[in-house]
Length: 414
Length: 146
Image (tube, rainbow over all chains, first blue to last red; front, side, top):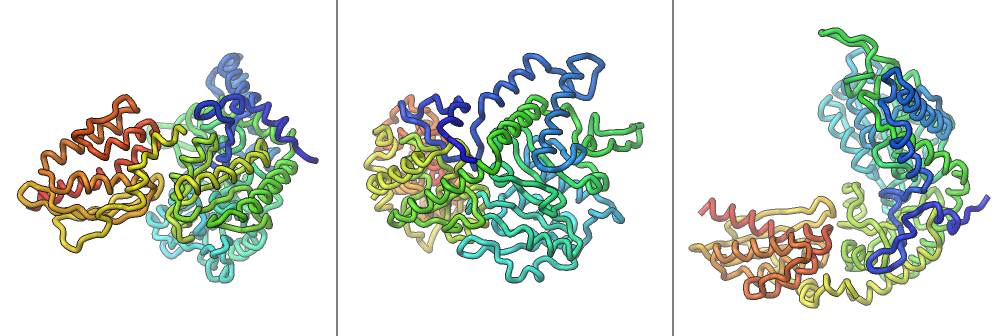
């Protein structure tokens, strides 16, 4: 199955506009957020126009329709990930989903599976996005647990040479990114999962950069929790997803308290609704949840396998083309083996901000800076990088334009 | 090219040949400022004697805008009275916040008017202000000691 980005682009109205005085938009920043197809934009709008009411409340038709809308979306997400509907928690973002896990675990009393005590260990890696580092770093500080991490090699891979020394019998939580948002590196999940199982720890996967780009089935991965973000998955902003094994979600204490997450309430006590409701207080981001359901249906129709294949081809094309540019240094794997479509690089002495500005003037949108992974950029020995990231609507012409403009920038700042 | 409004010759010159970019061992106050959105960093030392800025030295990493801006600042403010330096500081900050509506008072700002184009690029204003905010911070600290 192949995919024609020329056809796909017609579904995304943003490609009808121009940038900086009439230039064609070359959008190479999907790692930060993806563009949205008409179907998603229309679904959000349709919810507000025709079905808006507070879901899970009220005895009227609109409330029923709103409830049905988000519960249908939950079924779509469950199907997309290979989980079941009671395992899907909607949050406002993947960042919130990771904080939900960290705070809920921090709330777990002694005797609860998730309870942390001084000397317990939490394992992350040097290539985590801040959203999958700081919640664990701070949880460790609050509980007296010890934060440990896998280092990253100069070629941009996790250093697993001492995996048994990093993940030990004291390890309670292992939280890792599936695919680095900076380097594009995909981690060897099966090998790590086996070690996590051997020591009986909880395995949390930050799948923000993998779920939008490749087939991901939670049942095949031998993990316990997974988070991903709606807006990176051609869906709306304001919605994230937490998947967790049903038995674990039931044991996990709630994080945010309020309406609709309860079973009974008195002035002095409360009990909780079963998961996922226990983790969804307040009126949810309904239009966004509905939009996410439509986004995942859109991706499913094209095929996650086809999307992944397309991105691998683009990545190979980009790695080959960019390797030929003088003084351009790619950070991360130089081939497409266990690697996704985010290519970070430096360009001699030209600062990424200046390069990004130059590319913007040509209509090319890239990300510059430390990409919310400051410890990683420091480890790779650079202050900042420029990142081009690809998605289903990108073409090899996009990459040609990127390379042409990089050469022009070298002349301009040279 | 629209970009030339941003990257004026003066800016690229200062970027390639930064002035006073060597931290002096003697100073009244030293500050370290970062731009957390991009990781740009600057160390800045200042010496103030009898109400006059006697020395500003610095070191840092960052984009051409942030590096050139602090270089221009040192050229402009060394030798000025603190009250004149603050007048220039206020004018520069106002220029950065002008969204391209003003060109800046050239008598006051001299080479720093070259940064007028930056104000049209909201993401870059912080770059241009990094060194200036470091100067303000350092000068306040130096005076509170004195």
